[in-house]
Every structure is written in C-alpha cells, then in structure tokens.
Length: 66
Image 1: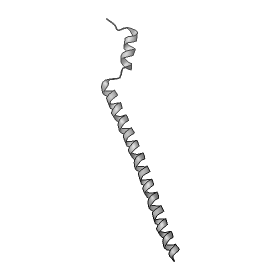
Image 2: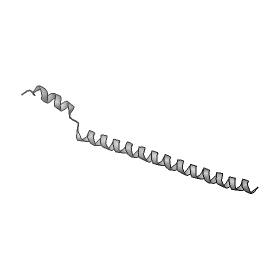
Image 3: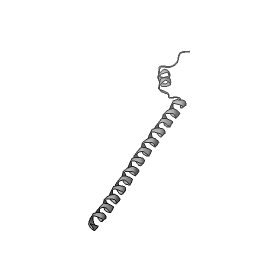
C-alpha cells in the first residue's frame, strides 16, 4: 500500500533524537566556551588595569619625594 503524499514529506522533515542531542551538546559547548572566554578576558583586563594603576601610584609617590 503506498504512503499518502503528506506522510512521505513529514518523514523527511523529522529529525532523529541523535541529531537533536548532537545539536544540543554542540550548542551548550559553544555557549560555555564563549562565556568562559569573555569572563577570562574581563578578568585579565581588570587585573592589568589594577596593576598599571598601582605601578603608576608608586612611581608618582617616588617622584614626589625627589
């Protein structure tokens, strides 16, 4: 018995559970990596700025004594 016309089209559009899980894992991996990279960048930037300001303060204090 032949399949109805709509049934063949619907079977091609279905995604298997395996592909859905692979897509979900990939999406979670990419989002986690992006969040970690942004957090690391902000942390390094803050640390560098604090170090620079502290060095400038110590140099300014030394120069004011001379």
